[in-house]
Every structure is written in structure tokens, then in C-alpha cells.
Image (cartoon, rainbow, N blue to C red; front, side):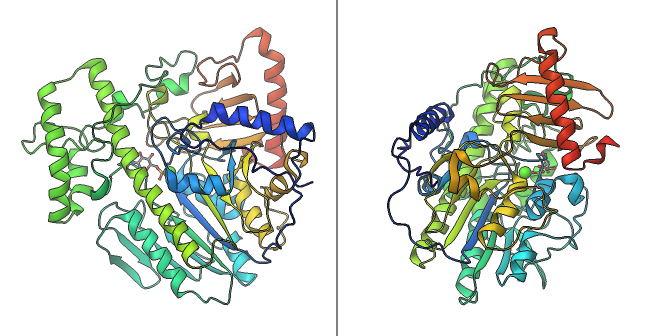
Length: 534
Ligand code: SGN
Ligand code: CA
């Protein structure tokens, strides 16, 4: 059965997760009643070897992508992908941190199976990856932008990557010939390099292009054009901003608090010329990103930030006022950096239109993980809590697929590699742990699918001090075990407590539920062969 999703009218500008859930209920309610959901229109043939463009950003929260949530920013470039394709409303990562996420996507395997457990590991580039398998099947493969896996990329005909985290202004790139410096803003440059490669590619062959952005990673530096995009905006303080972490030891012990850990100069750009704002990371900003700018860029930058700095100093904020000022300042820079991403996704989609590539190309948009926009008082990611466990996922399919609207099954970034292979007609190797999502697109609700996700985070001790943990999530519940120098369990009912403030673990009436979830967790650890068991 082909489920035809396109009748779900998307109200861009009024959509949010809540209304999306209502849409889903409506959609699947109608599907259950047989309410005209099967496409009768004759379908165009699917391209045999469609092209693939896999756009990934860094730290882009679903809260700041208007196809998911329109409270903070409108993202018309990305929303175009959502309107013309599929929005995955329950999309998650396997390990919420950069290099591990990238390794998961390349291999279709959880971190313990691909060997990249944290950012300090070096990716074993000799192992099987989807770019290698596509290359063997006749695809041209290219990777442009952030890589962060320490070893040089393998499986790509062309690669041009940022060293480590890369820089926002005038970044260096490394390709097979060495390191070069480029003038400009990183998000624009990555898009330029991508369209240049598309121009020059062998047009007889299908291609797979990975466009992997640096933005919107810390320290959230907007382009010169977008410096004032959100300058004076104030945002509602998240309900959980002043969380006291009661009943959640690991949450209490992290170091990613906007109030405690966000640096006034390094993160929030309060580099006063008088040198009176003395912070731990002042020099890192002054000699780092700020020093990279050209005189002209710095002049434009100072013209915007100097008055903000002067006002900030004059106000001499304390306590709650200071905390909320920091939150707004953070949001202003983060959102202005998202705007460049969105503009550039729009630009890339236009390139596909102008070059006759829109119809035979799968375009995927995701982030290496989600991010906290002040929920629980935080920035950063790492935890298995919703804001960082979830990640945006949009896919616009080639012609021949009736793939529109929303898919709500539990998908995870282990599923991307098998999906790309499946779409390209390449057999999916048995050792890949993820599943192709094509059946969800083709068969909708009737597709056989998983009922729980596995998660495992390892980077501790480490920056932001998030304890090691693993866990299981079903559509309604989540069980997490924090381990290593701690032994604490957390249980959440996501229906009654979506903000995960109330740890139910240990309460008598939830004993049975916890036992069932523990059994499921063990089953997943066995299925994925996570050696944590041994
Ligand atoms: C850097 C950041 C951290 C961030 C890690 C991992 N510090 O170390 O805030 O958590 O990257 O991010 S910074 O001072 O260098 O900005 S990841 O997305 O690469 O995993
Ligand atoms: Ca990241």
C-alpha cells in the first residue's frame, strides 16, 4: 500500500510539534478508516540510481527549524525540504556528540561497533562505510565541510574538510593536496565548494555529496550580513530554565549551564576594549575566532557588538537578570547563525532546480545531534534527554516516491547508511545495524518497524562533565542508566512529563514498567552486541 501523505496541509508559520502530532493523529486516523489515503495517480518511474545530497549541520536543534517548531525562527529554506518531502517527527541519534555521530552515520552501526565512542577516538577509515559501498556501485562521492574524525576521509573521490572544528571566519580547509586558507564565512564557502564540485563532476555518473556544515557549533558566530538579524529580540525563558535537578544526580553535576558555564566573552562576545570583563576564556576568543577576521569584517562586527558591550557594562546585571540576559544573547547569535544555514540550504536547492537535478536527487537534512536552547538551563548536548537525543531529519525524495508529510516511527542515525544503499539499489550488508527507512515511506503505518531505540554516550570524564550513560526509549517511556563513577537509573513517562523533570525510577507503582524496560534494554544490548554487558 502506498500511503499518500500530501493531503496533510502544512501550516508553515503556525506549525509546531504539538500541532504536528494532531496532524499525525488525523492522518493515521483517516488511513485507518481507509479515507482516501491511497494514491491513485499514476506514478512516475523511480530513478534507478538517484543522486544523494546529504546535508548535515552541527548542533542544529529541532527547536530552531520552523518545520518542527516556529517559536524562535522562520527557516524557509529548510521548510521547503519539509514541504516537498518528509519530516521525521521522531528522529534520534545513537550517541549525542559530533565525531561518534558522524561515525554512526557513515557505518550504520552503533558507537561500540564502529569504534568511535567519543571525540578523542580516531575513526578507523579501513572499515565499511556507505560512501565506499556507493563508490563501488558506480557513484561519484564527495565530502565537503566538517569531518572531525581525525583520520583522513576514505571512500570519497573528492574531499575538502575543515581541520577539527573549523572556523567561522576565513576558515582553513584540508584536501588531498594539503591545507589552504579561504576568505569568507564558512557556511557560504561550504555551499560554494559544493556547487563547484557539482559543476565539475562527471555528469555521466550518479553522485553522493556530503555537505557537512560547521554551523551552528559553539561559539555561534553570525555572518557579517546577519549580525543584526536577531540583535534586539527577546525570547521567552524556557519553563525548565531554573531546573533544580531534583532526583537527577547526573543532570545536577554537568558543566553546561548558561548561568554557570557560559563565558561572557568567549561565548557571548563581550570583548570590551577596556579589558574590564575578565573571564576564563577571554583570550581564547580574542586570539581565536575574533583574531581571524579581516579588518573590514572586524569593523562590521565591532559596529554591532560594541554598543551591546557598552549597554551590558552600564546595566551591571546580577542574578536572574544576568542569567536571562545571557540566555537572550546566546539565542540571538545562535539564531543568526541558523539563518545563514537556512539561506544556504535554500541556495543549494535552487542550484538543483536550475541544473535539472531536483527530480532525481534525494536531499537529506539532519544535524549531528540536537541542542539545548536553555531547557534545563543548558546549552550543549550529550544527554539522552529529548532536546539532545532528538535531531532534525528531513528528506526530499526523488520522483516516483509519494513521500510527503510526516513519519512518526522511531528512526535513528544508524538508519541513514542502509537507507542510502537501499535507495541506490545496493544490497545492505548484514552487519549494518540500522534499517532502511524506505518501507516507512512506501508502506506507511503498515511497515514492520522497531518499537524501541538504544542509546549509549561515553565521553566522560570530558568537557561539560556529562556522565556516561546508556538507555532505551519507546514511543512513551525512557529508561536511562548513568554508570562509571555513578550508578543511577532514571525513568520518564514522556506523555505526562515531556520535559523529563520527574524521575519515576524507584517508585513502587513503576516497578513493573522499569523491569519491562530493563528487559528491553538488555535485549537491545544483546541485539547490537554492546560489550557493556560483558
Ligand atoms: C568543543 C566545544 C564544546 C563541545 C565540544 C563537542 N568547546 O570542544 O562546547 O561540547 O566541542 O562538540 S569549544 O570551546 O571548543 O567551543 S561536537 O559537536 O564537536 O561534538
Ligand atoms: Ca555537534
